[in-house]
Length: 585
Image 1 (spheres, rainbow, N blue to C red):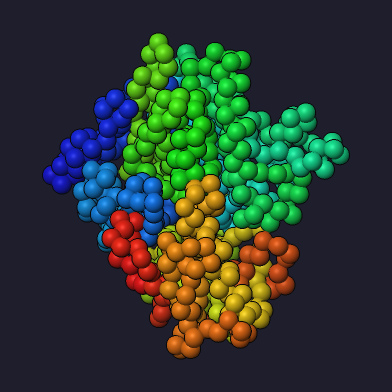
Image 2 (cartoon, helix red, strand yellow):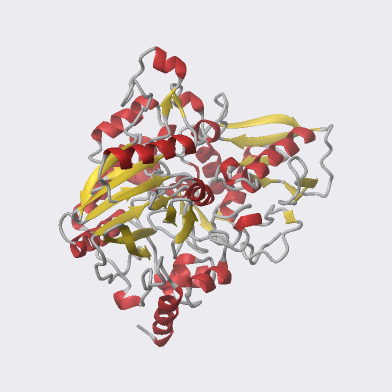
């Protein structure tokens, strides 16, 4: 540990305060970053949104994560220096690299890749061993079966096997539901963990027709919760799947199921659990997104903790929310297998007395790969190894996605659609998953699949009026910047190629987008028609080839992957927002 990292330890220890003012957990330097003395009686281990990344990868955190109103200047809407200051982490250190975008190229070369299930399993086994037999649970927040070529080709089954080796006790979902419902059910049957979701019900028609469900009387498609004895304490884990799945993803994949936040039903379930069972704690395993979880923690009482996912926010500190029933600990554990959250609970006579929380980066060069998991990963990837490693181009710039607006890899996808489809404008969804490629590294087919591999990848080229284009942008902007978290769906702004615009996040609905112009400076006219390329249609299936073929064709033709123009919108009315830094627009 060098002096700088030692000073970081002191800063983090003084900054990380828990319910009663005690340390949530220190962030030490290199040699003992994974040392965590057991605390209390119960240890909850949590990862989420790994998006099927079995191997170590690079992943750049956002420099744009805007928050407004009650979310202004509060986590998770802090980036760069503001986030490091909040967490008590010194710039230039290993942990600064894990939690922020700052100095990414240099730090990535210095500190190496993150994640990988072989390293993750090593870390999980260590923390379970330290807690002692029967004193820990491993919880998966979902988005596990989607996000890679092998997950797509095996229909998520490769990740089921990997999760079984990890020893996952319970999970919930989101992108899991973008496979056919029958495939979801088959994967759950093959899983050794409990799949839980209190907020997925049969539709009225499906219930009338006696469709398969965990409880036909209540309509619950899956187990709403599980009870586990951990460390001599009774813990209830409630599942909360992504509430807007049939809106954000094709409903044709799950026609018999209906989703929602269902806050009232959740409150009733908590009360039922506490009245029927002598539980010591009730925990929500959530895929709502952090802003939704923070509001949910305010309006629902009786939850001791919410372990959250969906928005990919790597939160170095837990947020404690006060409500009518007491306090709720709210966390979010990042994405891509990059982090493992550790929540230690100490119980007194009247419930949780104190806690320790740490979000630990999984640095692949600090952890020995678990041999059994490594063997499994090699075996499951072997049939597609040649396809995955196919070289397409050399990266001229840092290629990344994560952020409220266009990332450089998103720009590559948009440029590819415009070139191959001979289109004036291109759209690409504001997905938050997708790995990072360093300048000078080879862009392989696997890296393209990391950005594009979904079960509805078909492309289109069609005519759209300027008015229609604006409407699309307005709809997504309202999802992203709606002042009520319960109306946010957790993605980022649709990516645009070939066109610039001005975005005013605080404007009224329908008035956030203005001054749309093509790359040549021509103003986009509401009444004129433009040739637009896109992919990932939520409605009917598009007619074109899968997006990865389009991007691969473009990159192989160019032989390099670089950015000549980044179509990031100009922002209006954002002021000195700590969720914005080093913004190109």
